[in-house]
Amino acid sequence: QVQLLESGGGGVQPGGSLRLSCAASSIRMSLINDMGWYRQAPGKMRELVATIDQGGNTKFGDFVKGRFTISRDNAKNTVSLQMNSLNPEDTAVYYCSADSPYYNTQFWGKGTLVTVSA
Image 1: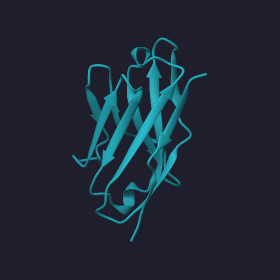
Image 2 (image 1 turned 180 degrees about the vertical axis):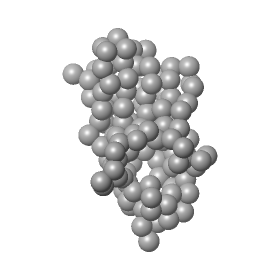
Image 3 (image 1 turned 90 degrees about the vertical axis):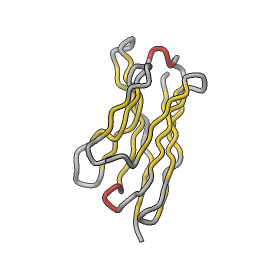
């Protein structure tokens, strides 16, 4: 059973930084194309934060504006998101996602809460 386990969420003050990590189990990273993060704030739809594919190509949501970086370690089956210059609008549940054309499935983690407040 494929599982995505997120870690690193929590509370931070505006302007601060957080690093989220996601570990994939029971699936080879070679079977995952895009892997990364989405987020959902209360009352809003889930939106793309950042993804990275097997070739290291990245996509970011428009709101990121250079504040976040994403990295992927295929040997460790992990993807990480470094978030800097956080603001209260970044408060949301952040979900790890792994898209596998082999399984024809987009897998999701359970989410980790990020709260940005003074």
